Length: 221
Image 1 (cartoon, helix red, strand yellow):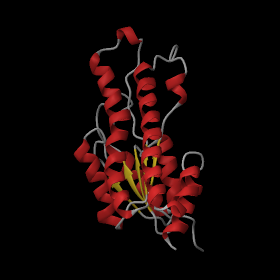
Image 2 (cartoon, rainbow, N blue to C red; image 1 turned 180 degrees about the vertical axis):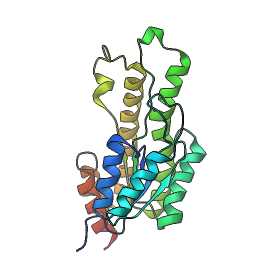
Image 3 (tube, rainbow, N blue to C red; image 1 turned 30 degrees about the horizontal axis):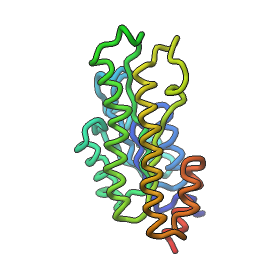
């Protein structure tokens, strides 16, 4: 029986645990081949391990899906390019990029160091920028694809008592990135191919899986 995302290829960053793992498993269950990217760091961004990504890949394969593990650091622009290359090398294309990777330093804003701010912004914000740009360049050539950037209400909610100042700032940045990309890429595509992208652009933010179905139908015409 055909699945909704058969033939599509997705990258999910930070997908060795938590929500990223859930996204990767859901995409694979719908038929997508998945690049499971996770550096395997601790919550504060220290350390590294191949175990989280490898464990999710085994779960996907055990359920009959397709997946490969990737351990690149999203905060490095060239490494983000290698994440995209992993999708192209292993599965021949890239249809979905979900920028989910995150690590953060917590504490009262006045007590945090510049290193604390940098560590959080580097992964959440610049990681999303790097992966969105690298994936977007491939999708521009394909004339198809979806970039889904995971943000949070933390950027407009008080961070106290959670003490998540750097996280809130980074998520505000990712929201702005998502908005800018959606306008720039979808509007450009609409100007070039209005029938192809009108419904897709309207669906992308609120119903990403439904948007992928629309994109798949349009691509197969």
